[in-house]
Image (tube, rainbow, N blue to C red):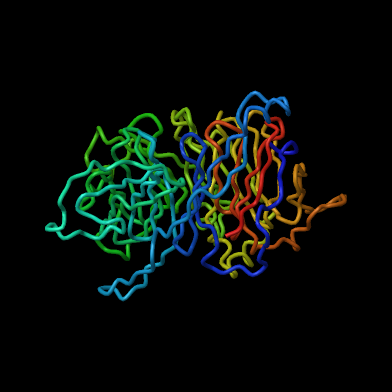
Length: 456
């Protein structure tokens, strides 16, 4: 990725400069094949994009041997509505916090979506036939008077226009007192976990009215509370292992074979703090906002406010790699605290081979780091420069010394344009970047594909 990344322009007939809060994208997730991409927004909507297959003849014309194609809207549905907790007199937002796809078992697709309190399982399927010739119903679906039925007929399936149906299959509610920040599907395909600030619950996909609490860090006296859970994820291959991160910057690996209640971790990963560099902001910037297992299950990728780190599961004393995402903001922490930007929760992702990591920054910038060389590159997701087949150029932040043309000064960064959410295709160099209400899909030049922008 990097300089060889291409982009293409929006398919929509217009772009809105005014962005409503409900249109802001809050999560992005590819399914296990990468053919589908789902986004959730603050208005409680889920939009599913499908990758279009390029006809074989067109592939031969451009000299391609594999499949390629654009992602176009496949289905849009309202996942969550605003709610009100009358016992606590609290409004529950409809904002979609996370989406996770289940491994595909048949022609239909299933995904989990959650807001702060309620998790839902959705079935996405296609229908190109409809039954006709009911005995007890008329053509409009009304039940007939049985006394008028004088003969029996065999119902038949008639071809019809392709329809994408989205139906709720399960609603998992009343499992969390605090706000849900993570959901993760287990490798067994039957269970998943959900995490809030103080507890992690394990659910069976077929049981909605109860869950099993596997982590509870709530103190007897809430005044003694010193840290909260920020993210949690199952191991990609071992169904008994999961990890969760905390606001103190630590990671805890838990083994469900050792104990039913995993309050006592198996391994604790944390980096010793340098007392000489401690400041008022130290604990805030060290809070882990996201944690992801590598595809091979050997490493953990975490993101705190200023850095991205890679941890080896065999080494607890500290990260094996540390990448400075926007170190130039260290001198701006006071103003970032005043405008609340210091509490932004950036996500991080691996590429399909675990050789490159990606995370977001401000000013519509996102960073990529090659783990072999340690080299980082800054790219920009900005619709005004997303021309067809355009090569993304690298950007540079000016912090001093000789200023080159095109450099961006630290004081001129736009902190309202933040890239918090992103996803990487599970097999190819295709990335999805969410920036406010825009979804950018970039594809590596070597694959001769193009990227485009969708606006909510």
